[in-house]
Image 1 (cartoon, rainbow, N blue to C red):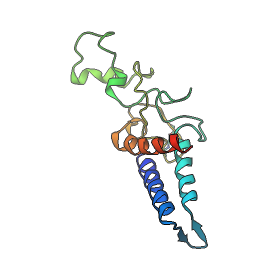
Image 2: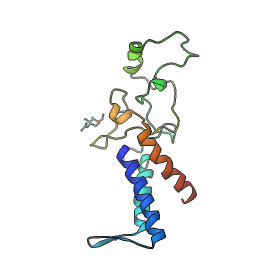
Image 3: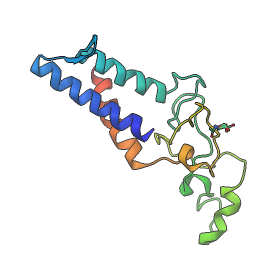
Image 4: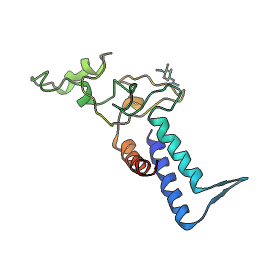
Length: 151
Ligand SMILES: *[C@@H]1O[C@H](CO)[C@@H](O)[C@H](O)[C@H]1NC(C)=O
């Protein structure tokens, strides 16, 4: 989702610029209006939140179906309350390789997303699909802030 969130944020920012400048983008036989760019960005956000072929939200904790095995140490290791003893650097493998869902939810985290086949393995070792990152999530915050005020 790193490209999706970044490009959608840029589309939205450019859409706002075009609106204020009272301009459109000629694009071959079509014209990209500010409204069209905004609509594209919104469709991408909706896809991330569950409006997609799998009916899966790629944001942890959002909706009833979301990634359960994200590639995130704090999510997949037991909490200190459940496991007070130290877990060494290499001792996390049994949790990493477990088929069980993560014991801790990183609510709001958006993961890498579906692969090229629009499928999602929901498996920790598939880090490109299951890892949440700052560069995926940061641009999405801007999009969500905008669309929460301008639905
Ligand atoms: C995409 O993920 C699905 C589900 O895990 C898997 O069966 C498929 O082989 C993957 N496709 C590619 C191109 O990696």
